[in-house]
Image (cartoon, rainbow, N blue to C red; front, side, top):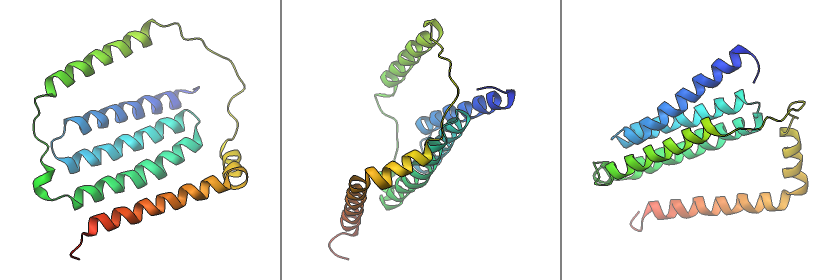
Length: 165
């Protein structure tokens, strides 16, 4: 990362992602938590852009911000209102302690490990190579996975519809 603008954008996206992730955990309304999850996914896509990972950023937007978020929203909409209660749990305090301990270990590792830096010329364009590999070398597994996902989607629709309708 070189350039002041890229560094500022990185830290803005990092703060947005961490803040939205904390909101996902803290919010009691599941719909609001799902919206905060969408913001966290979009922040990750922004982080990928600042790190010159264009293919990962597009994949993040298409798969997570688009498909997974819509799937979560549909699941919330299809859940009866009585099942949406996200009340307090007796595990909140131990989980908070475990999260704080894990955060302390990660911060210790980041600050005290001598991370080796490797020089290089930069990144190559990967989107064209990945597209060629998916549509030339790996076309059969790619199509099999798409048929499998279609079957899973049809199965989910059949399960949601119920017997009486």
